[in-house]
Image 1 (tube, rainbow over the protein chains, first blue to last red):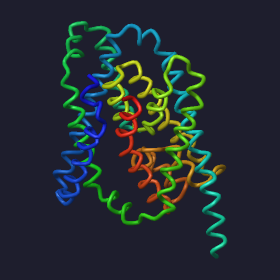
Image 2 (image 1 turned 120 degrees about the horizontal axis):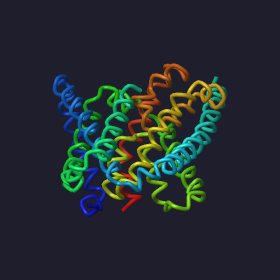
Image 3 (image 1 turned 180 degrees about the vertical axis):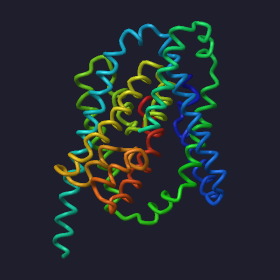
Image 4 (image 1 turned 135 degrees about the vertical axis):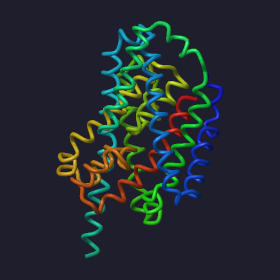
Length: 101
Length: 199
């Protein structure tokens, strides 16, 4: 399964191609709305499939609580980690704006 | 928020179908999802490229704004690194990859599942949904005590859409451009970082 994705640039190429196409077609409002709706349903389908692969895997169902705990620990750490540089950046901006006045 | 609930509903429905309808199990064996993922990335790209806010954010680009997503990337990786020490069941790069979803749970969980299977995929899904929920709930406190950039940093990739309303509400309208810019940069980096880390 991983072979397709192994060269990560390959995946990103699709994203970049999409951005270019979207930019070219940026005035086609109805087209963009259709793409948006399609993306949403695509994601619903993917998440349903992910749920399915969880449901048929008794090991995941049994350990759902542990997995959830790990998930929350990771996201809390990621958020706290992001807040620290954001705080200093904010202080820096304020001081700079103050000096310029 | 409404969107997240629908997504969780689909995910939950998938779990229940998987548990109670064994006849559906063949679905998991078909490997159409590889092409579907490339298709999904293309569609997401079209959405970003065609979005007026993207063009506006790119036009107002200046060095100070660029520092915001950089701070989020650095902080997220350092934070994930720190917590990885306390999660013995997971490899360091798996934890970093989950963190690198930056709250963009739909795409990151799909990619993680593709590369590493559903166990890490579920952790990625829950961790990144949690990031969005935490941001929505704590935005007023963050803006008040840690400055106006804090809700943007907490929101990560979601700062461009789902958490943008609370950011505007509590950090101020003048932070909308910073939020959208940071959100776009992080959104674009999700597939890059997640695949690079899990490779």
